[in-house]
Each structure stands twice: as C-alpha cells, then as structure tokens.
Image (cartoon, rainbow, N blue to C red):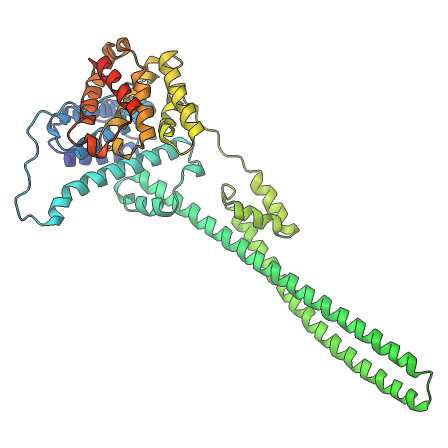
Length: 451
C-alpha cells in the first residue's frame, strides 16, 4: 500500500517535451495506485487535476499546431482518467481546452539545417500522439476487465511494441496482445495439421478400399474362368489348377499390400490423435473463441473429436461490457458520422442532433459531445474527413442554438469553436478543405450563432 503523496508543486511548462515528461511520470504513478488509501487516491486525483490545468495554461506558449494537438490529447486522456480516480462519485469536467496561443511563433530553423533536424520536431509530436493513443487503448482494455476484444494484432501490435518500455500499462497491454496472438497462431497451426492429417487419412482409406475392391473383382473373374474350365477335359482342368494357383498368389500379394496400407493408416491415426490432443490443450488455454470464420469452417469439417472443442469454444461468454451514460455511448460512436455505411452515418447523425435538441443526454454530456465535434473540425483532424463527414459535423453543430453556446459553462468551448471555424476559411481552405453548398450554409449558420 502506497503512502500518502506529498503535495505536487505547480509547474510551468515551456514546451511539449516538458509536458510529455510529466505525462510519463503520471502514467508510471497511476499504474502503482491499486493499493492506495482513499486519501492517497484523492491526492493523486488532485495532482491530475492540477496537471490538466498546467497543460491548459501552457497552451499560451505552444504555437505549433502539432504541439497543441498533442497537449490537448494529453488533457483529454487525463480527463478520462479522472472518472476512474474520482473518490466522491462526482463527475469531473471533461472538457478543458488549451489556452489561446499568445507568444510569437517558434523561430524558423537556420538555412542549411539538415533534413533530419527539421523533422525532429514533428517526430517528437508524432511520438507523443502515438503514445497517448496507445495509452488510451491500454486504459480501455484495463477498464473492460482485460477483455480479449480490445487486444491488438498485426501492424497495430508492432507499433505499440515500440512504446512498451515507456509505460507499465502499455507494457501489460502489449504483453497480453502478444500472448493472445501467439495462442491464435498455435490454434491455426493445430487446425491446419489436423485438416492435413484428416485428408491424408481419408485418401489412404480410399486407396485401400479401391485396391480391395479391385482384388475382389479380379478374384471373381478368375473364379468364373476356373468354373468354366472345370467342365472341360483334363487339360482344361490343369489350366484351372494353374489359374487357381495364380489366384492364390495374387491374393497373397494383395493381402501383403493391404497389410502395409493398414499399418500406414494406423500410423496416420496415431499422429492424428496426437495432433488432436495438442489442439485440445491449445483450446483449453485460449480465453475466447477464434474470430476467424475460416477456422470455424475447419472445425465443422473435422471429425467427431473436434466437435467437442467447437462446443466448448462456442460456450465461451465474454465479460460484461461496462455501463456507459447515453452521452458516453454517443461519444464512443461519434466517428461513425464519417463511416463507410450510409445508414449508420445517418442514424448516428440523427442521434446526435436529437441529443442536443431533445435533451436526451445530460448537460455535461452535451458539452462533452460538442467538444468532440469541435475537435473534429480542427486541423489536421478535419483534413482526414470526407466531404460527407464535414457536412455531418457542420450540420450537427449548426443545430445547436445560440442560447446553448451562451451558457456560462460553454465559454471556453465557444472560444475554441470560434478559433476552429475561423481556421476553416483560412488561406489554405480552398485548396485542401473543399465544402459543398449545404456545408457552407451550415458553416455560416454556425459562425452566426457563435457570435
């Protein structure tokens, strides 16, 4: 159990590197708080609150857009963490924007500076954003009681592995994802070996049946010839005896071949049973059924021994999903307004409009959702949206009344929305941010209501 933390002195951050350093220190501290007393948890929560305020105030000294985006991401991450570290059941204010930039912009690099140095600044900000994103995924995994559905695979796991030594929570997240991927590979290999052995077993059984059938037909043919010869003279009777000898010889030869095939079948059967036993062990160590549909096809096409493994895997029940508020559920799906499915886009957009118009979510959740939509319009996030996505974001924000924007709790959000909307019609807007006629109409309506 940790001791009560001493008061954390206020800091003044001069750069995104200072903010990232303190962010990493908080991440390390948060992974060691499981056995804390309520007083220690409250002290750590106060430290998070103070850190958010310090980062927000540092926005006045952050002029580069990528630095401001990284700093805002750090604020949003610890805003979400406050829900976990809350000790009195109160819901913290999750919407805390950066302070407006006041200082002069960062001086340009001297002429002749190597390209590696020019890209170092952008690389630092990208690393900070990537670590924040992976840390958020690790937090969601831990909050979901380590549900397997949140684990990473493929290229996402390779990327996250580069940050595992910077945060204990990311280290645990990457280790669990690696172990799950390894188990999945073992299961796939077991299914493949079982399928190959089953096919080989079936082929050998078919060959044995065909050869036995041919031997039976040949024996019947020779027996018929012998019966015809028995009605002839002694010469033909002698021929019959010779044919019978030849028949017996061939039968002995076929019997020897059948014995050899039978031995091969027994060896293949033994190998198949051994592979199935290993497969059962792998399935017993797997926390959830495989998500690959082709593997289910292999299970269905396997023999009766694998049927039991299929039933056991289908009987697995994932852990219950944590309960979210209506606003948090909408926030989790807000990116679907620019998704590939048209019906899903329309349904998500209508649900968001209804949330602001009919009050189906709490005022705090409304402010949180508006903050997320405003951030989607900020550069460079808005550049990744399609024309339909920009249309939907502007449409939803244009339905918010001027009275809502004028609420006292929305003052900082309103100021940030003014900055974001002003940047949409900047000098580069006509080149990289095209908008349709309806989108421009919604944009003008939003600007008027922000005044």
